[in-house]
Image 1 (cartoon, helix red, strand yellow):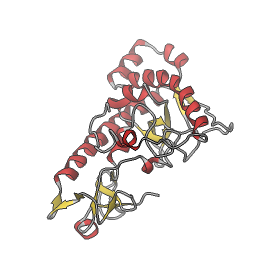
Image 2: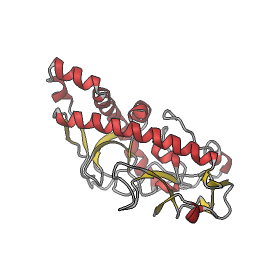
Image 3: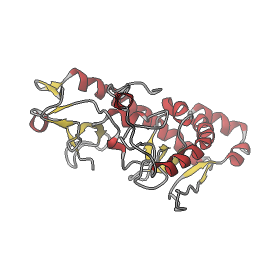
Length: 257
């Protein structure tokens, strides 16, 4: 369970962190918002679906699990199995979140740290702070998350345009036990084909048309996720720890990784 607190000298001055070596922090995540620059890469490896967040905003998300709160893209050692990892998951243990109630404007975001992360504690190899300022490594992540937040906001606007054009319809997806995920939507190819030239041009201008096509193409990744979910129960731990840790030690600040 994650518990994000604003980064401050009082809370984190004596703590340290290290870059994650597995994806245990995604264990309970089956949907992750994705931003427009990463959509093509995500759609090549994961199904994409439209879903509402806790605030009711409609987002484009990568689907990594077929049951709420279950991630079917992890093996027994918590290595990521899909060919693409959503950018938001690669910044752990950091997130940009709204400030505590009464301590800022609603549109503001502050850098927060998952205080309960296994990669945060007294013995990590990275400092959070350099005096009263962010350490260079944390500053790099802060800049990455800031860029990602901007892209996610623009992607949200594009999704709203698709919804406004009547292009989103319910999408029923069931897990390996026949239980359906709730609240998912997909782009409707039939409705898209009926749109006039002016509406299509406006959706293209907003970047919404590309999201619709990417989502439709990504549905071809659903069978692979279903197979992965079925195999998960019988998955044996890998013996080669060198294979597991290779490529997992460094956080990549690239939407296309």
